[in-house]
Length: 288
Image (cartoon, rainbow, N blue to C red; front, top):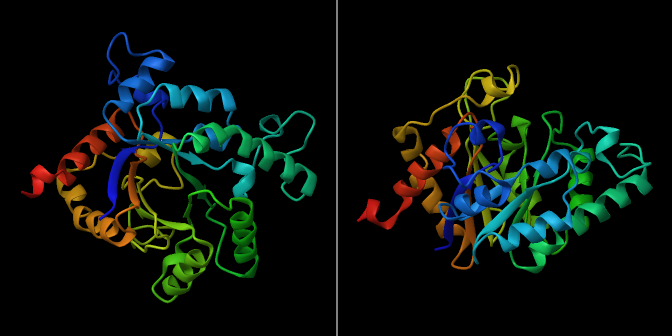
């Protein structure tokens, strides 16, 4: 059975910092990360979606966390087909994903930014979260192929936001597509009452990695403010639904693999509280 690491999607979210979860004396940049890493084994870096990661920060993250702690780094928006501000790309370049020179430069900067994590064995995955309009088809499959070539040798996880990828009639083909490139599928927990709801399927498409992201179960997903979209306090019963699924994923990734369970309901301290509860539910003591 592979190992299971539980954490949250960001340790620097403004709502979390303002919630009081970090104690006095541990609220500076270094103190927050050290405090977080004392309690969890993985964290997702979401800032890298909005701005290219820096080598300096990656080196500091390695220095401030214990051996075995890993970072799942969210791919920069331009690399996943999301709108990107010109100010977020290297100086003098437009945010034009259709320009090969721009794309090459952005990939080079992103690769350099996460290299200290990779070199130290602390890169848990690079998360490619594709937009809702990224639907199954020839164009999308070509894009995935290009991503696989660019990320050869990296642990990569893929989250689809368009539900058609994991509909019953398409799920097997989607799993085969990701498996062919060695890309790990991301399972999601979210409200299941919306047209955009992604089914809570748990395919394993990589022998070394599986990722589950808990987005909360707000009905405002895709329409409300950030706080509305992610405002959800997971009840223990809701988390228990996932315990056998997570354990099954751990069995399927094998003894050298990992399952990353990440909470994205970043409203106040809801994500860290849910992560603490889930870690307890998955502990050996809970099953003995």
